[in-house]
Image (cartoon, rainbow, N blue to C red; front, side, top):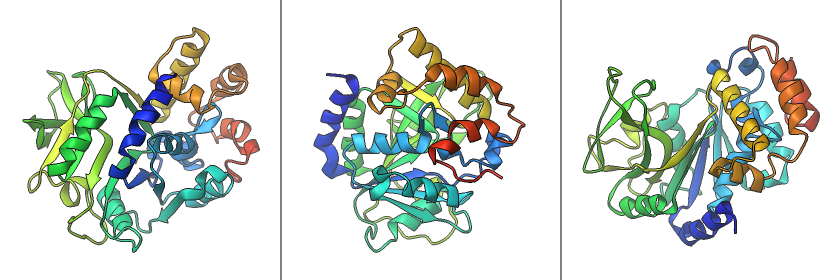
Length: 305
């Protein structure tokens, strides 16, 4: 049995504890260069599937049935993508105008009549993937029983440019910038939130102010000792990650991400042509012709210009 199938079997035991998932897709794409002005980040391909498709696969593998995603920038392209694939039949798109920030996005979803601030919510960033041993998910679900949130932290090198999350007895106490002199723990973007009894806040709001307010409520952190963290959040990091995936495939290197991509058919196609012909021809300051060749023909995005 593959790692992914084992993980899926394990997580399905906890389906009743996770009622909804929200995939954050409303960013402006400013870190994706000129191409990001034409293609919304969730529709950037990881070979033969988009980031959004893979995040939906990830949520489905956990047995979560009610999926939401928020949109703002280039929302028409994302809507077209959703309508093009029956896999997205259970995905509800929530368009934001104005952009609500991550806290506002959660409140916007939670205030719907069919949610009404009930149940537990898995929060997922469209451009990041975190894989870890099953026990850490068990720990998070256990911690959620007496916490507002159970968030997954990751240990990063001192040179990483993230905010540090300061913990005390596994509870979040402070968020701060570091001076680059030590390794530290940061929030990965993946977490489980308890919506029950969360105070409703309308409009624009910050995640750590109106949802996981660690100054007023218990916000638990689970920090896996071993994990795989894959980031596709900037144009440069995206291409580095795609290159690493390609070389892992050619060298038959196994990882949790590679298992995940294989299981979900993201690598079923001419990966050599994708990497050597299309990917290497990309000019980050160009007009998105790479994506016209790579994904428009598949009906993922209908209009670039």
